[in-house]
Amino acid sequence: DSRWTALWPAERPNAGADLLDLYRGLLTLIATDRPDEKTLEEHKVTSLFGEVIEASKGSRWVMALTLASSIEAIVNRIGERSLPLTPVELKAIEDLKAYLDGSCAPDRIVKRLKTSLESLPSLSTANAMRRLADGGIIRKADVETWNKIRNRVMHGELVSPYSSEKDDKNLRELARLFHDLAREVVRRALV
Image (tube, rainbow, N blue to C red):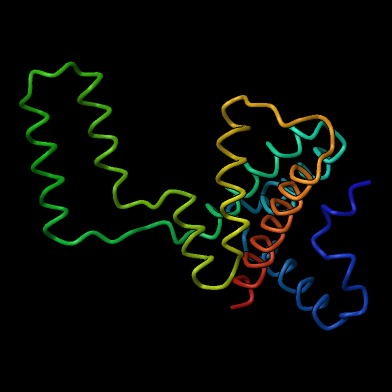
């Protein structure tokens, strides 16, 4: 049963106006977000729901892995991942790059350090979610669960195939986070 994957929560069956707003936002998102109108590909957000629905039929590890990566995709979709740097910080980055260009360090190390320097104006997914939690859009506890579970499952640590209260709670929190973020993407389509 994959009812828990639905965008509309089963515990709110009679909230008609809210459902219509959500549906209107989803249709607006799909209709206005077509970079190449010649393709009939599924929309990114709806395709993520398709993946989560398919994963709900798999193992608990597959569910956790799919939810964690889908959450990351939606956070990327929301944006808000830039962190403006001050002129002093930008100058320091350029100075460090120039220093690296003149160093005798192996190319592999220089490239890695430059990549790190170039990523400084970008927030990590976890930090972007913390900002969204600070704004009341998602729950901090769900972000903490995502961070813990995401790192485990993305690095090959299997989730127990057997249901336990703790693991079930973690999966429910991941599902709730996925839904909250998806509703935020839809809400922003109407703004």
